[in-house]
Image (cartoon, rainbow, N blue to C red; front, side, top):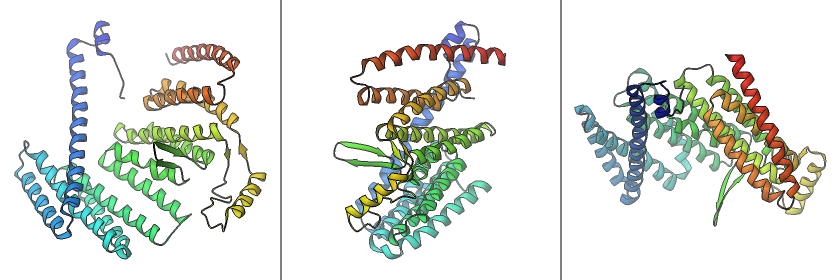
Length: 396
């Protein structure tokens, strides 16, 4: 179990010796430095690869430079020098990235009609070969093989997306494709043991209900046209991940925990939307959808939407606000009991966001609401404190 502890206090209390505390602190520093080095290295490789492709701006030049970089990097790795291994890794990945990235850009730009049909199988082939070598002994460093596997996956998924757009394929096939994106990212993230890649799976998974983000001048917004259904979707993900994490070894469990935490974040963002606007359940799924979905004019769409809303389930913003607050209180207590730091921190953060939002959106001119809410929080805190004491005594 990963836990946060004050080593100085533990030494003073006699729980740890000074030597044990130093060893724990040294390992912690080693992990943090390793994360920082890898983050800088990945950023440099990605930036250099993209820079070379757009600076050279010629397919032949990109291909030749990529081959030279790839060959040079593999030659450095073959020498086995630990001191120069980082440079060999970087050169190899920049070369591979230039070949695959340059080919993808050239196909999408100059050969749009066949780009998807080429990228889909080629990317899958690269990913499968790398997966096979990963499972049976890598040709080179795991860092290199894992990165090329991710490049192949990116090329494969981009090919599918190009085909979906080219043939204007919508629901339900597009929803299934998004589920496939999420499953593929989660599987590869688990295989190479990189939680950042696993975490990316939450984006296509949430987009199955068209939940996403948008940017316009001076604003970056989150939108969720189906708040209730997306929350139920995320709750299912959280339950499955928490259940699985409790039964797997730590190496696998941490991938499920990151997905559970991000699912919780998305669910809370959807709850924020619902607490402000309410939710007409199913309006964009089995209802009239959106105006862009084939309606000849706004009046036709508006009439269809109004007819659906007359008989649809509507959850008001007030109901959303109360239920959201109650669930956050339960999650905070449960996560504290189970040492689920990610869920605990996320729940506390959204509790603050919820309180801030409701303070100005709903109760800005209702001082009595603050009195009631403040007084109600005191026995709630006392009750949680007593419940924790009872559970601790029972476990002891």
